[in-house]
Image 1 (cartoon, rainbow, N blue to C red):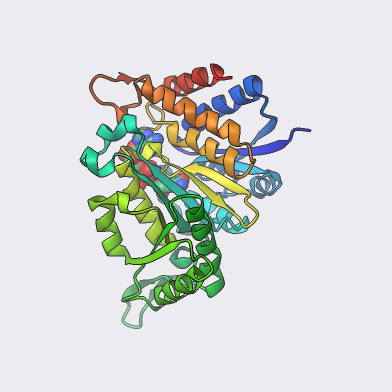
Image 2: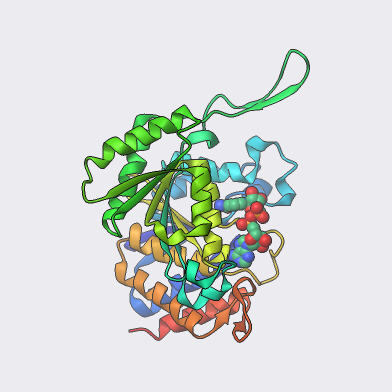
Amino acid sequence: MSRHKILVLPGDGIGPEIVAEAEKVLDVLASYHGLDITVEHGLIGGAAIDKTGTPLPDVSLEKARKADAILLGAVGGPKWEPLDISIRPEKGLLKIRAELELFANLRPALTAPQLVSASTLRSEVVSGLDLMIVRELTGGIYFGQPRGIRELDNGEKQGFNTLVYSESEIRRIGRVAFESALKRNRRVCSVDKANVLEVTQLWRDVMTEMSQEYPEVELTHMYVDNAAMQLVRAPKQFDVMVTTNMFGDILSDLASMLTGSIGMLPSASLDEEGKGMYEPIHGSAPDIAGQNMANPLATILSVAMLLRYSLGETEQADRVEKAVDRVLEGGYRTADIYSEGTKKVSTSEMGDAVATALKGFK
Ligand code: NAD
């Protein structure tokens, strides 16, 4: 039996294309560098709806429970938008995160030196950026009850959702943020809207209380509107940012553009034991799906996170990150990060370039 079991869930849109490139990387690690893995595949999202009528079939969830780590492409697309919200592709994603209690979402935003000019911001603002966004993933307004659309007495419709966090939920994500900061530059910025929302006043109180346990870490607080502004104005002031599910969703997409492209950013979603699901932060990009032009690097870098955080294969993770660096150094660029003087390549050519670089390492 192999040491590690990985479940691959390609999903929809560009999902299957980018995941195929990530699998090339896993294949090279297995055949050239002794990585001992078994890879299984499963259905999720629209692809699962088309075949089984549900966005997360039980068999996929069962495989996910048995796996050591999960690699996901992306889910969703216009084809499934007319469906009721309760059975849309995105529900499959929310369900797997909730069922596996993947409450901690780590989203590093690192600007590769070779891509400084691909950002829409001035190079002195983004060059050297190394930020970790820690987003709470299984609570908050995306999961809170009650929720729905109801009809009022006057016949008007009213939509409602509930933003709710308990102390224990805040504490466990706080711990992930403080522990991450200890391995980095020892600063945590907790992002809330405590001036308006009571639930995030509690968030702020719990973070402040927890900081007593981490005297080596400097804790600051920032309102989310200011945080959005500061991320664009001076992003290098941040080390670790910790925030709620919805604020983290929005701020991490914003942060992706500091690095040049949403196609560059990986993520890890972890449970309390470090088991995790790994995916690029972007969606299924229906506008470019099927054209072999998506950037697979966020997914390949998600493989590096998978190796590091869930499999404990630090050396293999280093190899993958080094190979991506080598390929960028060699001037290979997919359309989203292309600039004059570099080589424009397709999704599969980018994957091949990373695989070739990996083969060359000791
Ligand atoms: P998106 O992230 O799919 O795309 C936003 C823009 O970024 C598009 O112009 C797209 O072409 C570009 N882009 C994204 N990934 C890219 C890559 N790897 N290389 C090059 N360009 C890339 O967001 P969206 O358009 O708002 O959503 C599309 C679908 O994806 C929706 O159905 C949405 O619900 C779903 N979605 C899924 C996830 C997920 O699976 N985790 C996350 C976000 C959105």
